[in-house]
Length: 263
Image 1 (cartoon, helix red, strand yellow):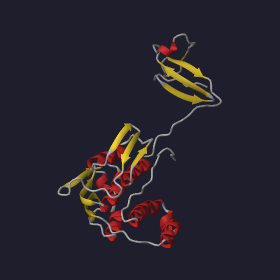
Image 2 (tube, rainbow, N blue to C red):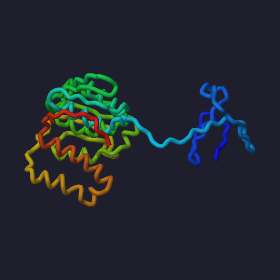
Image 3 (cartoon, rainbow, N blue to C red):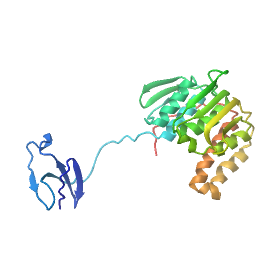
Image 4 (cartoon, helix red, strand yellow):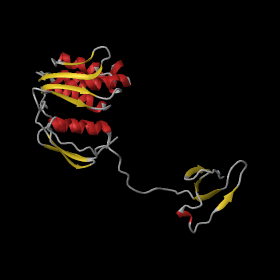
């Protein structure tokens, strides 16, 4: 069974065959056997039948994840020493995170488009100029906006995190509420619960939490009705981010990460 179309460079599969349509002048047709098919209402088209193959053998390199990439970059910036992050996704989210780290004078060495080495700050990230507001434009990168909003509260300085108009429609109030309960001077737009986010950072005192309390939060929350829904899981990620940062009082994570294993 073959389909005949006048358009060129189209490929269709039917009954175990793939039929490609190309113009007569296409260089790949030199020396090939071709046939002409006519049908009512259709113009003449060249067809070439490619027999089906039984298997494929090769190596596929999956692209990086924007969520894992930006989390790795931020953890590397908070850590002690140098961290090499490989297989970064080339996307706007990662670009905005890297630009934000540059603006905050966190050393990032670009080894390639997909690999960087980050020199960690051994703790909180402070504003490069204590007397000026550090304005970070994060586009529509939620993977940069939310983690940075929490992380920058641990340092010192004044920050404004903003983005494109669509970013100003994306909720962040749950995270802001959690940070405020920890003592952070941070706000978003009260009417919408969305960015821009304004931070007057003077560090977070954190606190000591016993391991049994930690277990109760981490293990049992996902089993609740709210935790079982996608929305509940998504919002709980924000709370966990604040919780983890607060346990150490803003201490760096101190571990290397390689973003090779992707889902």
